[in-house]
Amino acid sequence: MVKIKRKIYIPIFIIAVLAVAYFYYMTREPQAHQTCPEDFPETDAGFQAKTDSMEKWINNFYDKNPGSSLAEMAKARFAFYLENNCTKAIERYNEAKNGKADPATMQLIRDTIIDNN
Image 1: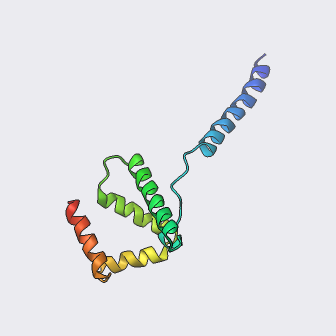
Image 2 (image 1 turned 30 degrees about the horizontal axis):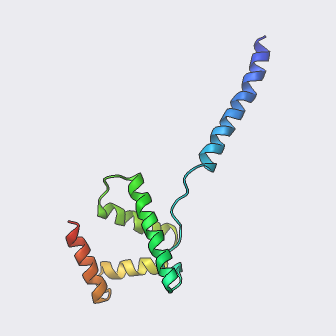
Image 3 (image 1 turned 135 degrees about the vertical axis):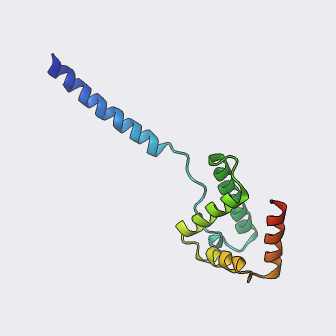
């Protein structure tokens, strides 16, 4: 009797583990579109797609990290650039960090930092 129960429980356990794994990996909410900013075409449609992608990424970030600061979001976005090898975005970040970006960009950065502190 014990061997019969054991023979029944083992396949049920295996099926349960496989079902949980399937639902975990197959039904997860997909991440925001994993595209670097420079991968979008320089057209009006490309600009809109880039804006939509960034907005979706930011919304996903704050959904997963409610109450995060702008600085925390910026660190996560930089990590995204590193993970996805967004070389042009990393170059722009380094230029801005060193104060060598074009004046209009630097002013936008300063205004954003001041407005959010």
